[in-house]
Length: 118
Image (cartoon, rainbow, N blue to C red; front, side, top):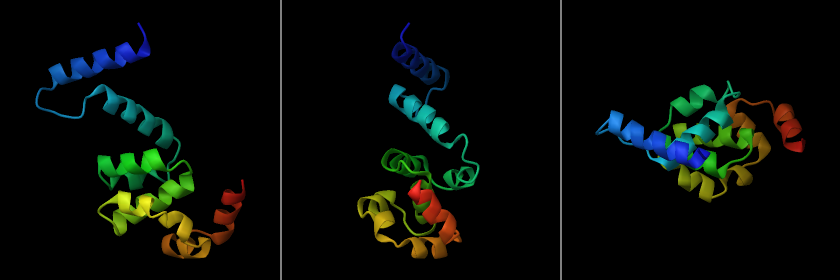
């Protein structure tokens, strides 16, 4: 059985087992898997992803490839914005200077610049 068929079957079984509970579509199960794979080794980001909603997390997850960029948007979403689309579509991360971002989030500028070079 192909993995897509397994996920489809799992989605069907979950919806049947938990009637009235949403979020168990096959596409959402794939998103959950991706979410786990991206954040499983990011102990620093784990508390942040718990503080914002699923839809906000999905926008950040799907639009940010860099862990530092994800951290930036997670913190921005948590503290400043209700809508992460505003922040990511406005390229806020790219417009902020490294020093400003570091000051906002207590990151060391040296560590940030080093990670951006690699």
